[in-house]
Length: 441
Ligand code: LLP
Image (cartoon, rainbow, N blue to C red; front, side, top):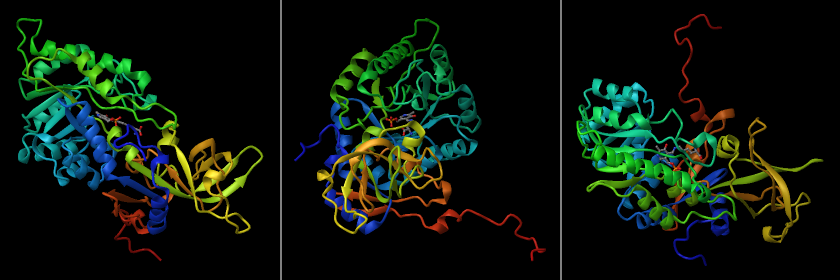
């Protein structure tokens, strides 16, 4: 039996019979999200960062059941769009527990959030451009603002998700103090913010520490400016972002979260009195709480490789196609040989290099390439691990594929929390091009 609250739940830690039962009950492909593990992850973050404000980056998994579990565990919500704010509100996040990070926000999003702020004046809007501040002021907003900074240093599992240093995000570091002071004439400036990127692994902690140290420096400069003419700001927090990585490869080490927390506190210190540290992890909360189940429908030997066709593809889990991301895959068995006989149990089969490919008409639609798996046969169930973060969230309907269903496990009880889309859902938003055309034959 695994120890309580281990630092990562690997795909091998899931109960194979339970997953097979869920697959049989709910069809394929199927996301399974364990709310108990979500709660454990929240608890681990709170234990490691006892005096920090911990905000869940909702974008990693926006499902209602997850949001409610996270809220009950005491985390705040960090939202990236009007849609995420709307979901967080519906899940019971309100008042000061609501944070909206505006990145080149569409007018509709700003209108919506300024409207929300009338009922929830303690919401904080995090802003990374002076133009966005102007647009808020034009809408009559004068509430809580956090200034997002481009710290000039980033980290993350892939170039596409390294935000720190990317010009798109935040006000350049050397202009940030002035921008924050100017903003204080129009808004209640309560914090500063930077985010290194997503999927920071143990070997990238130096970059993260550098970001944190810079943010500590800026916090001190804002609280007691070098320039005697500048007004000090009364900040509540310095938010150093999320990004804590989770080991996807079976033998990769997990982050030592308490050590990371200690290093973060040291790097940001000394903080002026009354200023809290804040973090906003997404992946860390939900990634290892989820698996994607998919069934083998085709096994095709070719001269170069053995191709295993499955019913989940890049529309269900985009990460391998988009970032070459590694997801662990475990064969849970259950299939039949071509002659109808039962193959050996998966752990008695030979490990064979296979390419697992989905049903989408794109060459990049593979979940893994040449990976050694317990030799799959048609009908086997595969569990794709660490799929709880940015899994369902990035699912789409390309190739007119309805999105999969999701089951949540709550204290062991399973419930369908997102129904499988039907073919009708694919065309639900369509309208006739010329509804009043009468010349049709
Ligand atoms: N805060 C901000 C401002 C962010 O932009 C993000 C993620 C987070 C927090 C949470 O980062 P996390 O703790 O989850 O690493 N789709 C990509 C990840 C994109 C992350 C974008 N921003 C993936 O699947 O790897």
